[in-house]
Image (spheres, rainbow, N blue to C red):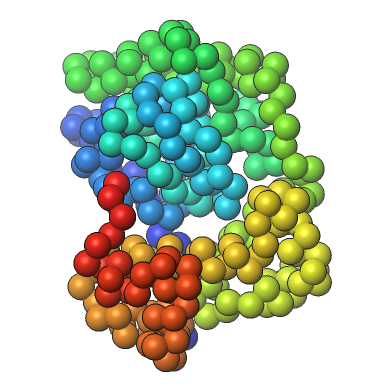
Length: 291
């Protein structure tokens, strides 16, 4: 059985225009999506990510939890978190990646770990007013540094990053977004990590419940409380999402895709896929959804 993990992207997979800027990456969201279309599919990364949306509405799924994505949304991801998004063609904003080492060049580690939006038991998004200007201007300044780098580029960009995080912490604390209890959220997040590691070989709720020392009914109840979905539905979605990625981005025969996803019978895989998507794998490959 194949047990490939969810793709984990590194900063070196996003070449910077400046040879110096390898501890961070910044780009307009609309340009980033064109340059790297694969980032819409489920993946994780080994760096921190900030996403600021100025135009467009969609969804952003982080560790199995789906959040609204709209103007004024500021998302925060830590290394190792899995995510994907659905964005309209007109989406605009800024995306910024940075390594822990980049932040630690100028600021203490305990401060980075203290930001509430980087706590996995807290909501990873801050909803700012669409006409907010202070944080938006800081992202624009970071982008300007990329366009005209100077000798102290790291220091200046690091200072802008620090200001973004410090300013975001104020309304985040006031927003106090409702979030599931820490224990339930952590258990569901661990389920998501196990699912990413084993979904090709294991597709039963019982397997994941056993790894979490829970009953299948308890795991289903947790998933309903936190995500409003059953654990079995989440397994189904994860398998189908990987199947869709392979069908769109590779020329593998359907039988090879089925084998890669742990199906011994390609015809059973076709029925499994069609039940969820409403199309056979061949039909989906010929007419994938727009966007």
